[in-house]
Image (tube, rainbow, N blue to C red; front, side, top):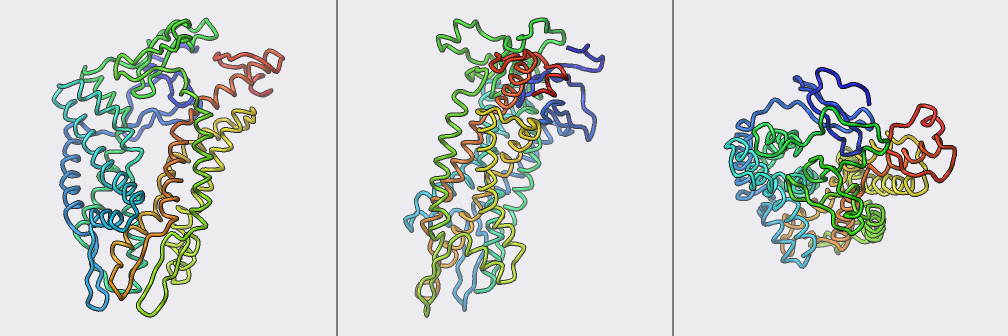
Length: 455
């Protein structure tokens, strides 16, 4: 291991590739990234806990307005129909679409509220330097709630629905939609302060133990890296337990947050394959069945699939929105299937290619995963707004719940994937090439340049 530079304050282990990275104090505009896989480790944000609490308070005010006031009002020949986010969910339930209604409730209401609640709790504990148990619970829940918060996707769904409705009546924007727009911006500001940064704030206040490695660690043993365990939940670095304890399946718990410690996610590849195949099963009927049906006074009901909805948007002149819907509802799911399938195959069959690029592909897939829910939210809003008895009506189709279920399973598959397995396979191939055999054992020591070229 190279000598530690004078300006390095601590050593941390990258959660994406297990590399040890030396970090120093960041200045304005700086970001610390892993030199091996490019994963962002830390970002300078410049916010104090009290300033972030002010943002949270404003977000709570906006959230109350979102839940209390209508999003939009539709006027069709003097017939008025308005809907709020609550009314959209209730209408889905009352019309028999329980799965779609529950998906919308969880991702657009419950989880955004949960995310804001846990961030507010964590920041309050850090500011007050009190209640460390509440702080630990809140910090463990931050990333879970944030990964499934789809309020921004719901907002885009509202905008797509408004464009679809401009051809049938007049629209009045409600206070709920304006408040939702502000709330999404505020949540984006809070999202820049990730769970890792909140843990660092808590460390600086002395509320939780320090998580980094000692500055001078002995790397003489080529398998030194196996002597440490990283908590998947909070990033705390621990000394690895004895081999006999691991063999008995008695993995210890993190001393900081209580999560179970493991070198790698348990049965990562098998679970990813199972979830990915399940998602593919739901994806087929999601594209073949109608996602909604429209009916008017003088015409029989017309069924629309996802693809026909994109074509209708394009023919009506809304080609920009048609592209957005096409990318979110058709292109993104296919990209997720291809990328995750390639990553799984590359690990199992040692098709390594450029490992750093594969790591970037995985992070990009995680980033775009939730945007596929766009079409589901659009249909929920259209059904809640366009139900004028005897005049015009939009019904939620069978493809809506199938498509939403597919999105959920692909997101679960991505969350169960352990990107460190990519680097494990790469290191193993480098070790095999260095040893001159094809069945080498795992070696966490840095490979030589000749081994890298051979691999």
